[in-house]
Image 1 (cartoon, rainbow, N blue to C red):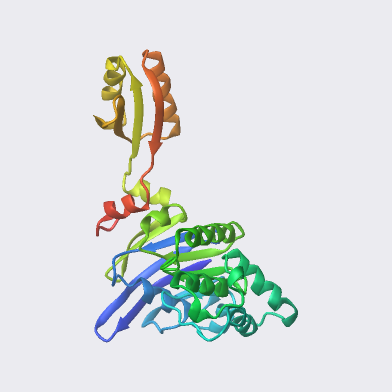
Image 2 (cartoon, rainbow, N blue to C red):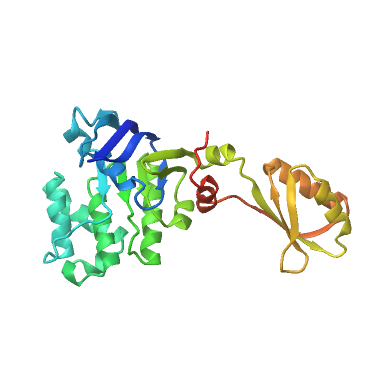
Length: 310
């Protein structure tokens, strides 16, 4: 688990991180989002012990980083937003150097390095020099390096930057797998659409402060977020529209460009949606399609829009 309490980071007169409280449970993937200059990178660096905070407490897996940083480092994996690499080394040499630095037993190093090279689809580049790799391939390499010690806590700062779609898919699937095995993951990214398919929790940061944090469900509830309901109705549509216009929890009913397709905001849960569908059928409406879309990370971020949510 990651526990951050009243963390503050200053750069001269600039308060980069302002009394931040944040928690990431084991098995949870928390997306840290916010505009450029919000303080995301400073928060991550202070959490992993790369910069010293003015005050506050960071506990990683039960280890207080102010008292036993070396013990905490052994439990975490950190991928910075920009990670310099030794360009003259081969991919294999780079991974083996870090495997040794992590203290992985000699008998296991090659197998561990090859395993993660294959997981991030770098196995075909095993003997290539790093200076011949594209930026996206270098990101894959640094990601593989981060995973070598099998950390149970991960801090990733813009890890998908420069990756192609396949690289991003690999990253997403690996992180989901790690979370399923109990790893606590904190990831910052500006690619909000990808955060939606990855994260189970969200924290929105602006001007050094956390505006809102929690699971996606908790944030949707706090924002009184509504689903977008889509219904394809075959003629005649009058009875269906009459029912929809008076149904509790439905607002903003409007036709879409496709004939017979209507959309509306819907505040009900799955049971309420099922009841609505039954009612439409009983009213004689011919419904050929019926589905709900929940607000994604991007929509939630835009709804927050610089406001604190309680």
